[in-house]
Length: 405
Image (cartoon, rainbow, N blue to C red; front, side, top):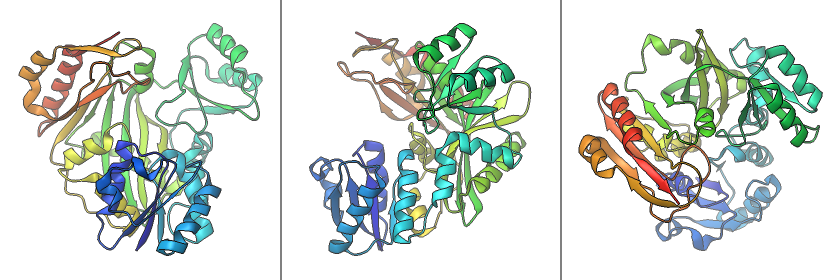
């Protein structure tokens, strides 16, 4: 089977999915990328059949042209895949042009356009935050008059809380509208601010049937982390997820994925358990999760999920063992901006929780801390008891301190 994997940039997490695809039996793998082939690690470079470089790795026209070039040298594609959020709509158009199976154009738009997504969810009676796509300042003021403050502002096609922030009062609202007024060509999505605990719901569907799911708890919500630079974020994947506590999101999440149009594939959905009771779906993507979640899932199930996802989208096959462990990740972030000067508390953390660590990427002195809530490194823990992992995560973010300079 000829599989074209679209990889705009050779980022480490993306290449793990590419490696998984390269190991699939009977697959002849080719790559379409914006990065030059020389940047691909040598072991993987020798495993691919063909490569075509494009100027813009998310432009459907350029991807289509690259696919036609590959077809002349390695044969026509049987599947065209990609794991990034920004690729889902372009790839849907490319697959439609080639007559290939996979996520369709309408479904891809439903997942990518967060305003359209919430409209679809509301139409199907599913709980989500009240929202409005504002194309003018008057739209924003009218929405806030309806739902009150605070509100969350985000781009309609955002991902991972990028360019997402909260407006708490009338002064902040007017400052925002004065500096960045929404327009018809650059609208913004406004949502009511949900109070409660935030989780994710990852699910795999095959022919419209949910065959697997995972629950993760954010500690605290990513937006809270972005607004408070002293917080080091953590994520907990409890071992016990087949419990009545999660019946509501299992039902609503599965119904939501069907409403949005996912038939075979994986989705990463974020949702809230409201402080006053009930749940609300925040948003969902039709792709595997980022922020080390795929690694966490792999450790929780004692399997290689980076290989399971390409097998799913190439062959429509999914076979992952039951959840055997609780896992968690603490994301190491220094206060402010700059380069890492030192890590404090390592010896103490090693004494207390070293036996639980299965993977760590510690910030290196001189490393520039990237923006966002993930920080400059992370530590992944695993244990059969959820409470043990939860307490260890709490201790890590208390003990470890990243000094920036």
